[in-house]
Image (cartoon, rainbow, N blue to C red):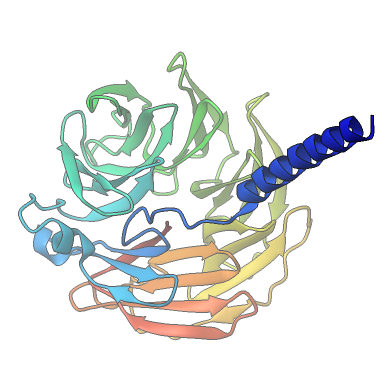
Length: 350
């Protein structure tokens, strides 16, 4: 009997030990394979001038390492990205580079290896998003008309394209669930945003009120917010397709633009200054959190983003020579000052 108990004890102890070792093995950390040289950091998009060789993309690594002209470094034999690079947007593995001349260049977002160029159903494209395996890109079409603007729908399984007519002057775009939302801002005369159901491709316009032309859009916790040049910060209710609430920015702050939301803090710009308030606030301080020095007549705050408590500013200078880009803390302290390419217009985080 004692021998049996001893054997039973050893069996139980062995099973416990094996289970413990197995669990310990599961807990052993390991380093995953890097996805590519551009996995951790951000891209600076330099729009360029009137020919394709003047645009470029800079990558700043998480450790501060800088790589200039990453597209041409990785793809010396690929066709150029186009003229007037407007925007980069992503899906899980790809980056889509929008050129105003009428193309979308597709690369691996981590290696920047060239995949393909899309040039059908595009006319003066602006910005894009991805929803459920399809990309949606805003197009201005003819600048002489505000009724011909459309979305390009790109099937990302085979890069086939189609169009959805919106009929307003399209610019920025955002996505929540199965809906995409566009800003409609025809030189201050349009005062709506358009909501497109990606399942049915039906379009619904939301009236923002006379004089309220939206120029930027942001999403936080699946809630859409827009900013107007007249100083209105609006929450959009996508269930009722109405304006849910409005915060009035002081009239002393003119030409408001560049809406960004980071950690429930709202950021926007006016001329060379950055302002901030929190989601839920009903008033906005007239005191900027920072003002930077710029000699540019038209390129002040040409690029702007806020990410992980860092403010990024692009200044286009004279649009012919190199511009500049800056990093600031959200308390207004300058963190870095850098030389950009021609007309830095955006920052994109990988």
